[in-house]
Image 1: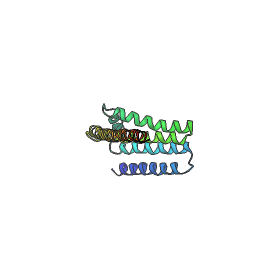
Image 2 (image 1 turned 45 degrees about the vertical axis):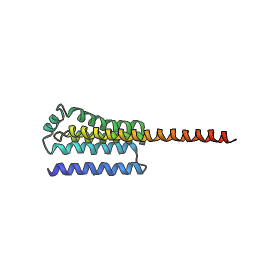
Image 3 (image 1 turned 90 degrees about the vertical axis):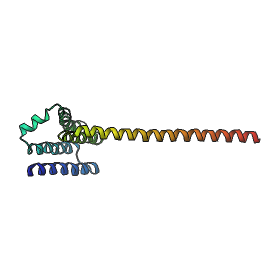
Image 4 (image 1 turned 90 degrees about the horizontal axis):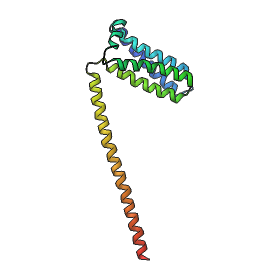
Length: 162
């Protein structure tokens, strides 16, 4: 348990500090990506302390975990490939965000009913965002028509006064 906590905390904290330094300094993109990938591998290794590495790999292959596991590993590889091939800081950061989302999905897949809860929460958030967007668009549309109506009345009124 101590190994799990130590690896998790070191990997998590180091990757966030590293990302902060990367965003706000002139750090080399390839160096950042390689160190970030090592932090992510450390996060995966932390899980091996809870079970054996063989047991963890077996758990990663389960039906409900295979997609998050594969996406997480691919996203780690993509961060390194994109950073070293393009050296574009913004694109690398975009893939780091994708990798972080994959990490949380991967982690949540190990919590019983975690993915079902996540889907339900995301569905509720999307529904709320949809209603909020409808309200904004409706108010915006009504505001435009109201302004056009008053503008039309002012033109009509000013032309009848002359």
